[in-house]
Image (tube, rainbow, N blue to C red; front, side, top):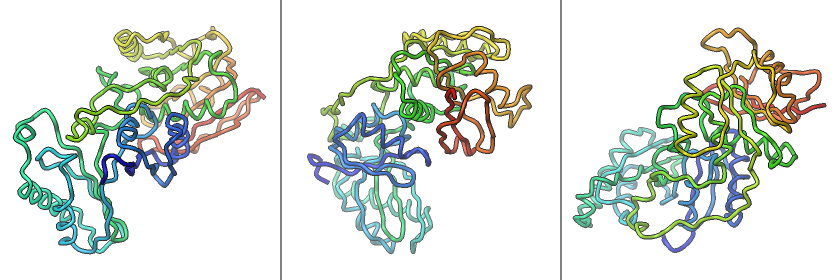
Amino acid sequence: MDLKQKASFFLVVTPGLEALALSELKFKFPEVDAKTIMGGIECEALPEVGFAFNHYLKIPTRVLLRFEQFKMKDLPKLFKKASTLNWRPFLRGKIPQFEVTARKSRIIHTGRLEKTLTEAIAKHYEAQPYPKKYLEDQSQNPPTVFLRLDNDMATLSLDTSGELLHVRGRKEMGNIAPLRETLASALLWFTINEAGVVVEKQTLFDPCCGSGTFLFEALEFFEKLERPFAYQSFPFFEKQKIIEPTFNKNFQFTQLIGHDIEEKCIEHANEIAKKRNFEIQFKVEDLFQATNAPTKPLWMICNPPYGLRIKLAHTLQQYLEKMLQVGEPEILGILVPKETKLSHAKYKIFKSLEFKNGGLSVKYYLLKKK
Protein backbone atom coordinates (compact mmCIF):
# COMPACT_ATOMS: atom_id res chain seq x y z
CA MET A 1 0.00 0.00 0.00
CA ASP A 2 1.37 3.38 -1.05
CA LEU A 3 0.51 5.67 1.86
CA LYS A 4 0.80 8.76 -0.34
CA GLN A 5 -1.78 7.51 -2.82
CA LYS A 6 -5.52 6.89 -2.56
CA ALA A 7 -6.52 3.89 -0.48
CA SER A 8 -9.65 1.77 -0.42
CA PHE A 9 -12.09 2.38 2.44
CA PHE A 10 -15.27 0.59 3.47
CA LEU A 11 -17.88 2.45 5.50
CA VAL A 12 -20.05 0.06 7.51
CA VAL A 13 -23.70 1.17 7.43
CA THR A 14 -26.93 -0.22 8.91
CA PRO A 15 -28.60 -2.23 6.10
CA GLY A 16 -31.33 -0.15 4.49
CA LEU A 17 -29.52 3.13 5.07
CA GLU A 18 -26.75 2.77 2.47
CA ALA A 19 -28.20 5.32 0.02
CA LEU A 20 -28.63 7.87 2.81
CA ALA A 21 -25.05 7.34 3.97
CA LEU A 22 -23.80 7.79 0.40
CA SER A 23 -25.79 11.02 0.13
CA GLU A 24 -24.17 12.33 3.31
CA LEU A 25 -20.71 11.32 2.08
CA LYS A 26 -21.25 13.07 -1.26
CA PHE A 27 -22.49 16.22 0.48
CA LYS A 28 -19.58 16.47 2.91
CA PHE A 29 -16.83 14.97 0.72
CA PRO A 30 -17.98 15.58 -2.88
CA GLU A 31 -14.58 14.72 -4.38
CA VAL A 32 -14.67 11.12 -3.12
CA ASP A 33 -15.55 8.40 -5.63
CA ALA A 34 -17.91 5.97 -3.89
CA LYS A 35 -20.63 3.38 -4.40
CA THR A 36 -23.04 1.47 -2.19
CA ILE A 37 -23.08 -2.27 -1.60
CA MET A 38 -25.13 -4.27 0.88
CA GLY A 39 -24.19 -3.10 4.37
CA GLY A 40 -21.99 -0.20 3.43
CA ILE A 41 -20.08 2.03 1.03
CA GLU A 42 -16.92 1.34 -0.92
CA CYS A 43 -14.77 4.35 -1.79
CA GLU A 44 -11.29 5.52 -2.72
CA ALA A 45 -9.66 8.37 -0.81
CA LEU A 46 -6.35 9.63 0.46
CA PRO A 47 -5.68 8.30 3.99
CA GLU A 48 -5.99 11.78 5.51
CA VAL A 49 -9.43 12.10 3.89
CA GLY A 50 -10.61 8.59 4.80
CA PHE A 51 -9.63 9.06 8.43
CA ALA A 52 -11.63 12.31 8.48
CA PHE A 53 -14.77 10.28 7.72
CA ASN A 54 -14.73 9.26 11.39
CA HIS A 55 -15.01 12.88 12.50
CA TYR A 56 -17.61 14.19 10.06
CA LEU A 57 -19.88 11.38 8.82
CA LYS A 58 -22.74 10.78 11.24
CA ILE A 59 -24.54 7.83 9.59
CA PRO A 60 -21.83 5.11 9.19
CA THR A 61 -21.04 2.91 12.19
CA ARG A 62 -17.40 2.14 11.37
CA VAL A 63 -14.70 3.10 8.85
CA LEU A 64 -12.41 0.31 7.63
CA LEU A 65 -9.19 0.76 5.68
CA ARG A 66 -8.89 -2.01 3.09
CA PHE A 67 -5.37 -3.33 3.61
CA GLU A 68 -4.96 -6.30 1.28
CA GLN A 69 -7.06 -8.60 -0.90
CA PHE A 70 -5.93 -11.97 -2.25
CA LYS A 71 -7.15 -15.43 -3.27
CA MET A 72 -6.81 -17.97 -0.48
CA LYS A 73 -7.76 -21.65 -0.45
CA ASP A 74 -5.71 -22.93 2.50
CA LEU A 75 -4.25 -21.76 5.80
CA PRO A 76 -0.58 -21.89 4.69
CA LYS A 77 -1.39 -19.32 2.01
CA LEU A 78 -2.95 -17.04 4.64
CA PHE A 79 0.07 -17.48 6.93
CA LYS A 80 2.58 -16.73 4.17
CA LYS A 81 0.70 -13.68 2.96
CA ALA A 82 -0.04 -12.19 6.39
CA SER A 83 3.49 -12.75 7.73
CA THR A 84 5.08 -10.87 4.81
CA LEU A 85 2.70 -7.89 4.65
CA ASN A 86 4.00 -4.49 5.70
CA TRP A 87 2.24 -4.00 9.04
CA ARG A 88 4.75 -1.45 10.34
CA PRO A 89 2.82 1.70 9.32
CA PHE A 90 -0.22 0.46 11.28
CA LEU A 91 0.85 -1.76 14.20
CA ARG A 92 3.17 -1.16 17.16
CA GLY A 93 4.52 -4.59 17.92
CA LYS A 94 1.44 -5.96 19.69
CA ILE A 95 -0.92 -8.68 18.53
CA PRO A 96 -4.21 -7.03 17.54
CA GLN A 97 -7.75 -8.20 18.07
CA PHE A 98 -9.37 -9.95 15.10
CA GLU A 99 -12.87 -9.98 13.60
CA VAL A 100 -13.18 -12.94 11.23
CA THR A 101 -16.06 -13.95 8.96
CA ALA A 102 -16.08 -16.71 6.34
CA ARG A 103 -18.69 -17.87 3.83
CA LYS A 104 -18.80 -19.97 0.67
CA SER A 105 -15.11 -20.85 1.06
CA ARG A 106 -13.01 -23.96 1.56
CA ILE A 107 -12.09 -22.76 5.04
CA ILE A 108 -14.95 -21.54 7.23
CA HIS A 109 -13.54 -22.29 10.70
CA THR A 110 -13.06 -18.76 12.06
CA GLY A 111 -11.04 -19.99 15.04
CA ARG A 112 -8.39 -21.54 12.78
CA LEU A 113 -8.30 -18.43 10.63
CA GLU A 114 -7.76 -16.22 13.67
CA LYS A 115 -5.04 -18.52 15.04
CA THR A 116 -3.24 -18.41 11.68
CA LEU A 117 -3.38 -14.62 11.59
CA THR A 118 -2.02 -14.43 15.15
CA GLU A 119 0.91 -16.70 14.28
CA ALA A 120 1.59 -14.83 11.04
CA ILE A 121 1.79 -11.41 12.70
CA ALA A 122 3.94 -12.85 15.51
CA LYS A 123 6.28 -14.20 12.80
CA HIS A 124 6.34 -10.75 11.19
CA TYR A 125 7.35 -9.19 14.52
CA GLU A 126 10.18 -11.72 14.93
CA ALA A 127 11.55 -10.93 11.48
CA GLN A 128 11.23 -7.16 11.93
CA PRO A 129 11.66 -6.09 15.58
CA TYR A 130 9.76 -2.93 16.43
CA PRO A 131 11.20 0.16 18.20
CA LYS A 132 11.35 -0.12 21.97
CA LYS A 133 9.20 3.02 22.38
CA TYR A 134 6.30 1.23 20.68
CA LEU A 135 6.64 -1.94 22.74
CA GLU A 136 6.71 -0.01 26.01
CA ASP A 137 3.84 2.32 25.13
CA GLN A 138 0.78 1.05 27.03
CA SER A 139 -1.44 3.98 26.01
CA GLN A 140 -2.02 2.80 22.44
CA ASN A 141 -4.03 -0.33 21.69
CA PRO A 142 -3.52 -1.92 18.26
CA PRO A 143 -6.39 -1.47 15.79
CA THR A 144 -8.69 -4.43 15.19
CA VAL A 145 -7.85 -6.40 12.05
CA PHE A 146 -10.84 -7.61 10.05
CA LEU A 147 -10.60 -10.70 7.84
CA ARG A 148 -13.48 -11.40 5.47
CA LEU A 149 -13.33 -14.62 3.46
CA ASP A 150 -15.92 -14.89 0.71
CA ASN A 151 -15.72 -17.42 -2.14
CA ASP A 152 -12.06 -18.01 -1.22
CA MET A 153 -11.28 -14.30 -1.65
CA ALA A 154 -9.67 -12.88 1.49
CA THR A 155 -9.95 -9.20 2.41
CA LEU A 156 -7.85 -7.83 5.25
CA SER A 157 -8.98 -4.49 6.66
CA LEU A 158 -7.89 -2.26 9.52
CA ASP A 159 -10.38 -0.57 11.79
CA THR A 160 -9.79 3.20 11.81
CA SER A 161 -12.67 4.02 14.18
CA GLY A 162 -12.09 2.15 17.44
CA GLU A 163 -15.37 2.41 19.31
CA LEU A 164 -18.42 2.31 17.06
CA LEU A 165 -19.19 5.72 15.64
CA HIS A 166 -22.54 6.06 17.38
CA VAL A 167 -20.43 6.75 20.50
CA ARG A 168 -20.29 10.54 20.31
CA GLY A 169 -18.55 11.14 23.63
CA ARG A 170 -21.39 13.09 25.19
CA LYS A 171 -23.55 10.58 27.10
CA GLU A 172 -21.32 10.28 30.12
CA MET A 173 -24.24 9.27 32.39
CA GLY A 174 -25.25 6.31 30.22
CA ASN A 175 -27.38 5.78 27.16
CA ILE A 176 -31.02 6.08 28.11
CA ALA A 177 -32.46 6.56 24.61
CA PRO A 178 -32.86 3.27 22.71
CA LEU A 179 -32.22 4.85 19.29
CA ARG A 180 -28.55 4.94 18.32
CA GLU A 181 -27.12 8.29 17.29
CA THR A 182 -26.15 7.03 13.82
CA LEU A 183 -29.79 6.03 13.18
CA ALA A 184 -31.11 9.33 14.51
CA SER A 185 -28.80 11.23 12.17
CA ALA A 186 -29.91 9.07 9.26
CA LEU A 187 -33.57 9.87 9.92
CA LEU A 188 -32.83 13.58 10.26
CA TRP A 189 -30.90 13.57 6.98
CA PHE A 190 -33.73 11.62 5.31
CA THR A 191 -36.27 14.17 6.58
CA ILE A 192 -34.21 17.12 5.35
CA ASN A 193 -33.75 15.63 1.90
CA GLU A 194 -37.39 14.67 1.45
CA ALA A 195 -39.22 17.60 3.09
CA GLY A 196 -38.46 20.18 0.44
CA VAL A 197 -38.73 23.21 2.74
CA VAL A 198 -36.19 25.60 4.24
CA VAL A 199 -34.67 24.25 7.46
CA GLU A 200 -33.43 27.57 8.80
CA LYS A 201 -36.98 28.78 9.47
CA GLN A 202 -38.16 25.70 11.37
CA THR A 203 -38.49 24.74 15.02
CA LEU A 204 -37.63 21.07 15.62
CA PHE A 205 -39.71 19.50 18.40
CA ASP A 206 -39.47 15.99 19.84
CA PRO A 207 -42.42 15.35 22.21
CA CYS A 208 -40.99 12.00 23.44
CA CYS A 209 -37.33 13.00 23.39
CA GLY A 210 -35.91 10.57 25.98
CA SER A 211 -32.36 11.80 26.58
CA GLY A 212 -32.49 14.06 23.50
CA THR A 213 -30.78 11.98 20.80
CA PHE A 214 -32.63 13.51 17.83
CA LEU A 215 -32.03 17.05 19.07
CA PHE A 216 -28.34 16.58 19.86
CA GLU A 217 -27.80 15.01 16.43
CA ALA A 218 -29.61 17.90 14.73
CA LEU A 219 -27.34 20.36 16.51
CA GLU A 220 -24.10 18.51 15.71
CA PHE A 221 -24.78 16.96 12.30
CA PHE A 222 -22.18 19.19 10.63
CA GLU A 223 -19.81 19.54 13.57
CA LYS A 224 -16.49 17.72 13.95
CA LEU A 225 -16.64 14.77 16.33
CA GLU A 226 -13.75 14.91 18.79
CA ARG A 227 -12.99 11.63 20.57
CA PRO A 228 -10.23 9.00 20.32
CA PHE A 229 -10.11 6.99 17.07
CA ALA A 230 -8.09 3.90 16.18
CA TYR A 231 -6.31 5.55 13.23
CA GLN A 232 -4.60 7.92 15.68
CA SER A 233 -2.46 4.98 16.87
CA PHE A 234 -1.09 4.27 13.37
CA PRO A 235 2.69 4.98 13.48
CA PHE A 236 2.75 6.47 9.98
CA PHE A 237 0.05 8.99 10.91
CA GLU A 238 1.44 10.18 14.24
CA LYS A 239 2.46 13.65 13.06
CA GLN A 240 0.04 14.09 10.18
CA LYS A 241 -3.37 15.74 10.12
CA ILE A 242 -6.68 14.81 8.57
CA ILE A 243 -8.07 16.93 5.76
CA GLU A 244 -10.90 19.11 7.05
CA PRO A 245 -13.83 19.23 4.60
CA THR A 246 -15.70 22.42 3.77
CA PHE A 247 -19.45 22.39 3.17
CA ASN A 248 -22.53 24.53 3.71
CA LYS A 249 -24.06 23.94 7.14
CA ASN A 250 -27.68 24.16 5.99
CA PHE A 251 -29.06 22.18 8.90
CA GLN A 252 -29.64 25.00 11.36
CA PHE A 253 -33.05 24.98 13.03
CA THR A 254 -34.43 28.15 14.62
CA GLN A 255 -35.17 26.30 17.89
CA LEU A 256 -34.67 22.82 19.28
CA ILE A 257 -37.26 21.66 21.85
CA GLY A 258 -37.60 18.34 23.66
CA HIS A 259 -40.30 17.12 26.06
CA ASP A 260 -40.59 13.80 27.85
CA ILE A 261 -42.71 12.34 30.63
CA GLU A 262 -39.67 10.82 32.36
CA GLU A 263 -38.01 13.33 34.68
CA LYS A 264 -34.72 11.38 34.78
CA CYS A 265 -34.45 11.55 30.99
CA ILE A 266 -34.91 15.30 30.98
CA GLU A 267 -32.42 15.74 33.84
CA HIS A 268 -29.91 13.69 31.87
CA ALA A 269 -30.52 15.68 28.68
CA ASN A 270 -30.16 18.99 30.51
CA GLU A 271 -26.93 17.78 32.08
CA ILE A 272 -25.45 17.01 28.65
CA ALA A 273 -26.68 20.31 27.20
CA LYS A 274 -25.15 22.26 30.08
CA LYS A 275 -21.76 20.54 29.77
CA ARG A 276 -21.62 21.15 26.01
CA ASN A 277 -23.23 24.62 25.99
CA PHE A 278 -26.06 23.39 23.76
CA GLU A 279 -29.06 25.66 23.27
CA ILE A 280 -31.89 23.13 23.54
CA GLN A 281 -35.09 23.64 25.54
CA PHE A 282 -35.85 20.48 27.55
CA LYS A 283 -38.99 20.15 29.66
CA VAL A 284 -40.79 17.42 31.63
CA GLU A 285 -44.22 17.03 30.03
CA ASP A 286 -46.67 14.23 29.27
CA LEU A 287 -47.62 14.44 25.60
CA PHE A 288 -51.20 13.45 26.40
CA GLN A 289 -51.53 16.32 28.88
CA ALA A 290 -49.97 18.90 26.57
CA THR A 291 -52.05 21.79 25.23
CA ASN A 292 -49.63 24.42 23.93
CA ALA A 293 -47.67 23.94 20.73
CA PRO A 294 -44.07 25.16 20.39
CA THR A 295 -43.19 28.07 18.13
CA LYS A 296 -44.20 27.66 14.49
CA PRO A 297 -43.35 26.91 11.71
CA LEU A 298 -42.77 23.49 13.22
CA TRP A 299 -41.29 20.09 12.41
CA MET A 300 -41.86 17.18 14.76
CA ILE A 301 -39.74 14.06 14.95
CA CYS A 302 -40.34 11.20 17.35
CA ASN A 303 -39.35 7.68 18.37
CA PRO A 304 -42.32 6.88 20.64
CA PRO A 305 -42.44 3.87 22.99
CA TYR A 306 -43.59 0.79 21.10
CA GLY A 307 -45.23 -1.05 24.00
CA LEU A 308 -43.53 -4.35 23.10
CA ARG A 309 -42.15 -5.08 26.59
CA ILE A 310 -44.38 -2.93 28.77
CA LYS A 311 -48.05 -2.39 28.02
CA LEU A 312 -48.78 1.26 27.24
CA ALA A 313 -51.91 3.24 27.99
CA HIS A 314 -52.00 4.57 24.41
CA THR A 315 -51.61 3.04 20.96
CA LEU A 316 -49.15 4.32 18.38
CA GLN A 317 -52.08 5.66 16.37
CA GLN A 318 -53.13 7.66 19.43
CA TYR A 319 -49.57 8.99 19.77
CA LEU A 320 -49.73 10.13 16.16
CA GLU A 321 -53.12 11.82 16.57
CA LYS A 322 -52.08 13.61 19.75
CA MET A 323 -48.83 14.88 18.23
CA LEU A 324 -50.62 16.27 15.22
CA GLN A 325 -53.32 17.81 17.42
CA VAL A 326 -50.84 19.52 19.76
CA GLY A 327 -48.30 20.71 17.23
CA GLU A 328 -50.01 20.84 13.83
CA PRO A 329 -46.53 20.52 12.28
CA GLU A 330 -45.66 21.09 8.66
CA ILE A 331 -43.67 17.85 8.72
CA LEU A 332 -43.89 14.91 11.14
CA GLY A 333 -41.41 12.04 11.23
CA ILE A 334 -42.32 9.04 13.39
CA LEU A 335 -40.47 5.73 13.88
CA VAL A 336 -42.63 2.66 14.60
CA PRO A 337 -42.47 -1.14 14.20
CA LYS A 338 -42.69 -2.14 10.55
CA GLU A 339 -46.13 -3.77 10.81
CA THR A 340 -47.72 -0.65 12.34
CA LYS A 341 -50.41 1.01 10.20
CA LEU A 342 -50.86 4.76 10.65
CA SER A 343 -53.28 7.24 9.09
CA HIS A 344 -54.76 10.68 9.68
CA ALA A 345 -57.58 12.60 8.02
CA LYS A 346 -55.60 15.84 7.64
CA TYR A 347 -52.15 14.42 6.91
CA LYS A 348 -50.72 12.10 4.28
CA ILE A 349 -47.71 9.80 4.40
CA PHE A 350 -45.46 10.94 1.56
CA LYS A 351 -42.25 9.01 2.29
CA SER A 352 -41.13 6.04 4.37
CA LEU A 353 -37.92 4.22 5.17
CA GLU A 354 -37.39 0.66 6.44
CA PHE A 355 -34.43 -0.71 8.41
CA LYS A 356 -33.66 -2.59 11.63
CA ASN A 357 -33.30 -0.96 15.03
CA GLY A 358 -31.71 -3.31 17.54
CA GLY A 359 -32.88 -6.36 15.57
CA LEU A 360 -36.46 -5.07 15.27
CA SER A 361 -37.79 -4.27 11.80
CA VAL A 362 -38.97 -0.66 11.90
CA LYS A 363 -40.43 1.90 9.53
CA TYR A 364 -39.95 5.65 9.57
CA TYR A 365 -42.93 7.58 8.21
CA LEU A 366 -42.89 11.16 6.99
CA LEU A 367 -46.25 12.95 7.02
CA LYS A 368 -47.32 16.39 5.84
CA LYS A 369 -50.61 18.24 5.61
CA LYS A 370 -52.89 17.29 2.74
